Image 1 (cartoon, rainbow, N blue to C red):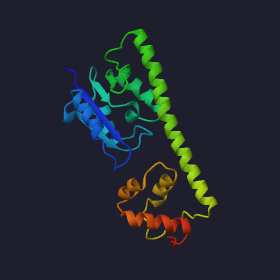
Image 2 (tube, rainbow, N blue to C red):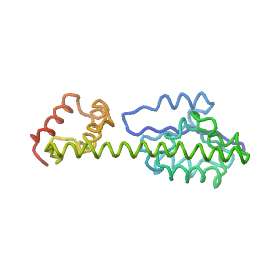
Image 3 (spheres, helix red, strand yellow):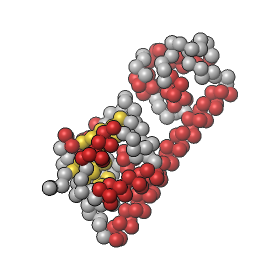
Image 4 (cartoon, one colour):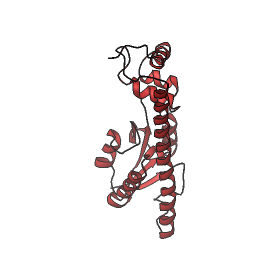
Amino acid sequence: MSSKKFGYARVSTADQVEDRQVVDLLAYGIEERDIFIDKQSGKNFDRTNYSALRNTILRKGDVLVVKSIDRFGRNYSAIKSEWEYITKTIGADIVVLDTPILDTSQYKDLLGSVITDIVLAVLSFGAQLEVDTKSQAQKEGIAAAHTRGVVFGRPRCFPDDWDTYYARWKAGELTGAQCYRAMDISKSTFYRLVHETENGSGSKA
């Protein structure tokens, strides 16, 4: 059976677009039907389309291509474990377009494997550090809001996921536009709810 190339693209939220990743995967020579896309967090590998690709489609000799290591995942230990499972247990190769040294189809000798391991460790650690930094910023944003007397109880008229998006907006992790589009509310409604939240004027649910 001949080997195949598969692409994987991921964005963290439903309002983000994966166009640039897909364009690069197509340019690499991957058929559109062989590109799998998830709109889920990169904190773990429990993702619908990735799981389908990994568990039922990817075979020995195939090649899995991603734009960058953080599209593959953002958890250091999970990335390392997943990388080993695909390259050793399944016997497929992985290519990271933004980091040419991370190409197991080209660097199969001992030195290449050692260099790949080192680069993978550094980049995946960086992806993990970015997640930790954002998480800390979010916590600090919530703490700062509490010191100003902000009450995070959700008023009846607020979206169900308001507390989460409000905290991420306060932490600078998301823009207002990303938040109100993700919650499917208007710009004016978003900033009205921000005002009500910060002034404690909304009635609690």
